[in-house]
Image (cartoon, rainbow, N blue to C red; front, side, top):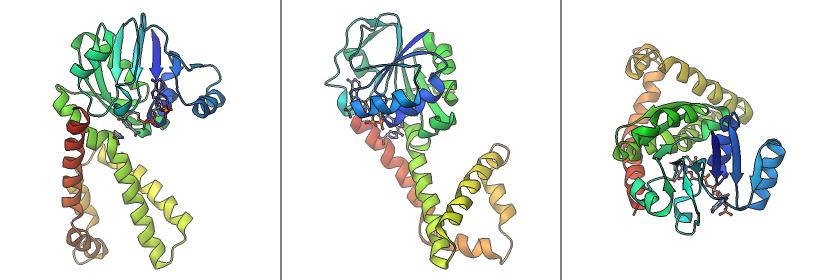
Length: 248
Ligand SMILES: NC(=O)C1=CN([C@@H]2O[C@H](COP(=O)(O)OP(=O)(O)OC[C@H]3O[C@@H](n4cnc5c(N)ncnc54)[C@H](OP(=O)(O)O)[C@@H]3O)[C@@H](O)[C@H]2O)C=CC1
Ligand SMILES: O=C(O)[C@@H]1CCC=N1
């Protein structure tokens, strides 16, 4: 299987970490980025122009706003698009392929720990899941609507978790803990939580930590006062709405 990655910026580039298992050709418009990738992945073919798509599984990783300007010829074996919000119907108008898939990875692909939402043509389902498993966990969803919803919890949430990590560290720094040590804590914390949540319901985990009249409950009350839960619910909704707007 030959993969053609079009656009190797933040996300396409992160996906290369897993995709390099395959025969990958990368088309990247921005020259400094090509140089950076050439140093990181000396065995991968990097170029500036898009070859005819025939015989390739095309992985499209440009910004949704760049799609209008994209010019391609030929018929791809399959198209996998990671463009936020952009529906399959719009991709079909622009790119000819035997099968069409939408995927929503996340930046943890850099560590091969993405959780990637996938939907589209059943005919390419197994192959798409296999390719996308090279960058982490791949979850098949039954509709584009579900994928647009999962764009929040899958694609965008790393930025929100980074905000949480930074805010926790800021709180510790505010009380006098050194910045570098605080970041060590948040990295270990996120890692530990990931492992625990594989096996435990979040509410049960919270109950185990929160002692009656203890420190956790005191902090928890402040988080509720600040509307943290409500903010996340609203962030998820804003993300979904923005996906729909991007698709128009
Ligand atoms: N960033 C993330 O965490 C995630 C992003 N996504 C999706 O991934 C896509 C890419 O996002 P991101 O990586 O952040 O964006 P970037 O801008 O970092 O990367 C896109 C790259 O594609 C290049 N490019 C644009 N047009 C072409 C073309 N015709 N041929 C070759 N290269 C081209 C751009 O070059 P130039 O700048 O010169 O135009 C740029 O370097 C988006 O559609 C986004 O919705 C999905 C999940 C997570
Ligand atoms: O912010 C964005 O639009 C992209 C899609 C998901 C993560 N980044």
